[in-house]
Image: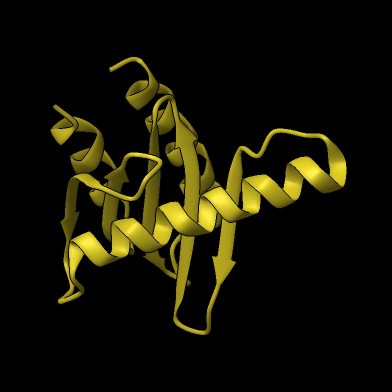
Amino acid sequence: MFETIIADLLGINGVKGVYISDPDGNLIESESLGTADDEVCAALISDIFNKAAEICEKLSSDTLELITLEGKKERILISKAGNFILGVIADTKANYGLLKIEVKKAADKAAMV
């Protein structure tokens, strides 16, 4: 059901994995180019989003839209996508502006499912 969304994101240069989960961390669908356990990645991505959303709400009374985690080699973008959570893992050399735009578009598409 999310194949097109995942394929579009994986088509971006530098994207290594795409994970769609429910808010409880249950993997709905994924595709990764690495050896990571997709179910574990989806659970961790959901956990990060849920905790950050709670913090954001308490500190600023605002709704969280996008989280970006920066490592030395990889960048993780996490977004709410309707009733789902969308996580994208990409190389830090990937175009960050393009990633943000495409993750937003993908989240909007996933929210319609």
